[in-house]
Image (cartoon, rainbow over all chains, first blue to last red; front, side, top):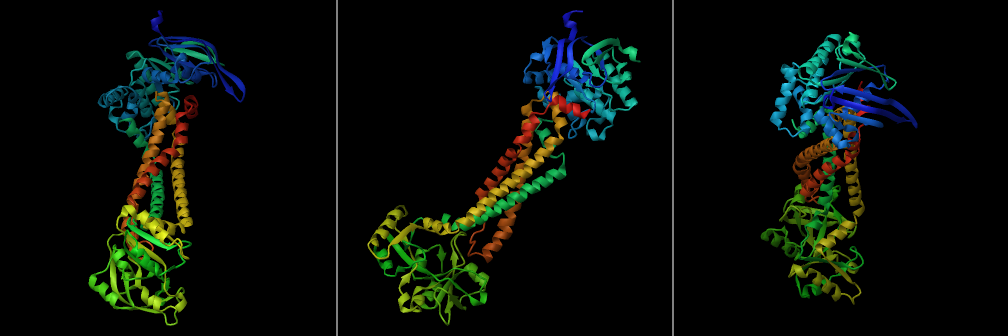
Length: 235
Length: 389
């Protein structure tokens, strides 16, 4: 595999937190390589460091040691401002609780990340409508989050995650708040994004059924990657 | 959607809270404006004082009289166009002993010097022809129900009289502008003087002079005082503004109290706004964390919070002014001018106070939001997002 094919490249990543005068190591000398177009799941027990790893890859946090390269860019060296720019242009976020702004309609929520890009208002609206069409919510554009079901809210969140055409989508327990049927629909949608649009997705999950949809599953325990498996092993 | 419309939407997130905050700010602004109007009404006389008039009084204190002969010497001084004198009477109508109004015993030249209080020539002639005649302001006439020809009896502790002081109202003066007192009672100084015991006669309270050239008011004042420098009773001459300001200084404690209450009201307004903004920021921690994750910078969040607070302050201030204008100009002002014109001849909302109130509402709104804005900008994204799960 050539270097250009690698989207996520972590080398010797360590993350420690200072809590009450004590040093707490969450991730220790972790190496991870993910090619472009991968749909990867991160699994592991609570406190194993899954979300911390996801935050580091998404540029929400910085490692204590080691290097993180995303699409050839060393993000662990970026300033706060450049990291924010990196997130807005290169990363799409899907959260467990959807995190939509309740004062905005579905289409306005999807537009939100584009407010930071030099895009005209009409173009912003067009792109947001297209993203909502992709997730099958063209008939719910003007609905507020409170008027949508959990599954629909998560679809809006997915539309928000893809609207700026990011190279990477990070999802933290995207089906954690959903019933089985809605969870399956969301996972199917994520599969489609990966397969048909070629999006690289990295998803933290506790749910083996969700992990089964991923092409590759990484298991973490006590801050270390334990093993790598095919998604099919969790089916 | 724009960043501005997003900030505006946040204001409408909790309509009840926003409405109550706006109302709180508006009430504070109305109270503030009411106090500033009281202060402006009280001090308005000094602000609108004539520039070409001098007031000469006893050098020691306003309450000590001057010899009556001084008026002739003052009238003879170069630069003095006209001069008049008055005594404070300090009386009351026993039939209306709750009503306070100022009474002055003045010489007949009074209305030549105080030209902003105008009497019809025929009425003035009738007044001058009647030794017990009196001229009253139109507001006083309205409040007391007096009219030309009515007989009035006043009592005073300064100039006691067994039978009281009887007057016949011969004229009602009108004011040429709103800020001129319309509630005073004037009568002949000679009538007062002749009714006093020998030892108290020929004493005058103060002299008011009109000078030829307003640019030389100060020099004329110095010349007047110099003329009496070597006499037993020395004088102090001041331009009308300084004289009235000095008179108001006697009430400085009350004015300071009004200022202090005004500042307290502004502080209350700041706390109302600060509390609302802080609550809003605390409730939206997860949203701010989400926005930060999506690429918004700390300064974006800071400006969101400051902008919201500024708009809230501005809207509250505008609402307060919107309430204060009809309340003060239409209802309260009209009532006070008609019924308490002696204290508040002009009770009108000063434009400057409205500008000050609006600026304070905006500025203090932003000030109140500084700490919440700092909290929003410094939100720990990973911690705030983790709390959601």
